[in-house]
Amino acid sequence: MALIYDDAAAWRAAPEKRLAFFGMSGLGKTRLSALLRGAGDWFHYSVDYRIGTAYMGEHIADNLKLQAMQVPLLAELLRSDSIYIGSNITFGNLAPLSTYLGKPGDPSRGGLPFAEYLRRQALHRRAEINALLDTGAFIARAHDLYGYPHFVADTGGSICEVVNPDDPADEVLTALSEATLLVWIEGDDSHTDALVRRFDEAPKPMYYHPDTLIPLWEEYLRENNVVEADVDPDAFVRFAYARAIRHREPLYAAMARNWGVSVAAADVATVRDAADVTELVARALGSRGGGV
Image (cartoon, rainbow, N blue to C red; front, side, top):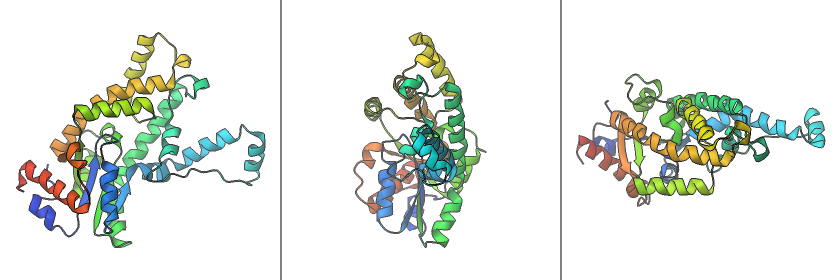
């Protein structure tokens, strides 16, 4: 698959640089994007922020209102339009989105019925695809409206769950690769182990492709000899994450192989500023065969 920059020299000389970082959450996508934004001439497009505001915002707010309606005082104020309830999603705080996605299992421990959990997962899938397809429009908006010459898309860890990297006609990857250089931040086994440990300490909701999620749910019920209402929501998402993170690795690799380039998470950790990011990407293009 042809890239928008033929080689490292073309990348360095490009008057308008466009990147899209992808990979597991926690390996540096947002940090690199923030470093570029801090340089002053890069527009930072957060796919997760777009999901939570443009496409899931109404669902999130309605869920908050549903909870508030259980409190008589708040219910009365809501009915009379005396109070406003909404989420305060930011680039650095996506908790309203993950809270809405939820975890399946025992309702007394905050769990959702599995059917409702699947419904919310499906909403997220459509929202993520839409937000990724919005990248081209935001490149034009950043340039034409705000005057930014450079653009970086900070994608969510679940991007590999909504694309088929081995399909040369994949809609999302085609659109992204025509507009940006896709860059995988590749971790090693030690990074994977660290991410699993971090998740165990603070398990959070995530999006999974149904072909992955449903078998994992059935396996968990079977191995633990429990029914849906008895499932510990945190225990299930820990179980799912440890398997999903390894399931995603070959998908990310195929995305980089067929649609972009890769950089090592260890090298990402040494990056200090936007100039370092430019050189990191140049080396990745050189390693692909374009010359350093």
